[in-house]
Amino acid sequence: MPDNTTIRLIETKDHKEILNIYGHYILNTSISFEYDIPSLAEFSKRIEKVISFYPWLVAELNGQVVGYAYASRHRERKAYDWSAESSVYIREDAHRQGIAKKLYTALFQLISLQGIVNVYAGITLPNAKSESFHKAMGFSPVGVYHHVGYKFKKWHDVLWMEKELYEHADHPPKLRSLKEIEKTDTFRNAFT
Image (tube, rainbow, N blue to C red):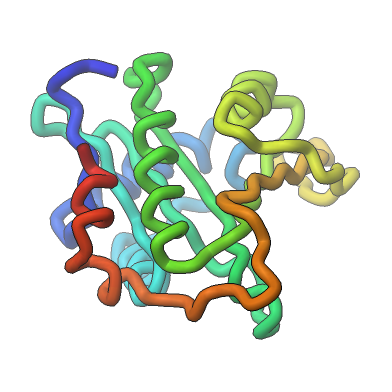
């Protein structure tokens, strides 16, 4: 990864740049199953909902936002609380520089501090680069939802992968919000 890349928590000023990165994936790929780019106001609401508990990180290269990663709730039922989903998006001209790896590494450190044990990722198939990346990050395949999404006049499968962040305890820790872990040294070390 380039030396002048920094990872940090999202700020309101980043929303438009992040939406621009995401918009490319909406309009040009089946990686996102959205058809239309949301308004900036709607997208900002989504971000605020996520960061009310989970981290949303951005990568900056030479002062420009070139990627982001975030964790979100896996399912609504209480028993799922120790599991999260992860997403990472990199600006089209910033691939293959180790930025996604750095984002995910910091993200997983932070959600581990929160008490999250399992992290899941859904990958629209075919996507060999994303499959390979997630395997390199320690994910294992769980299964495939066949023909689960329809976009660009084609049905798409989604591969689900999982990663165990640490050993499952008989009594998992109490979950902590992002705000609760922000004052710890381990939190600060996640960005170095």
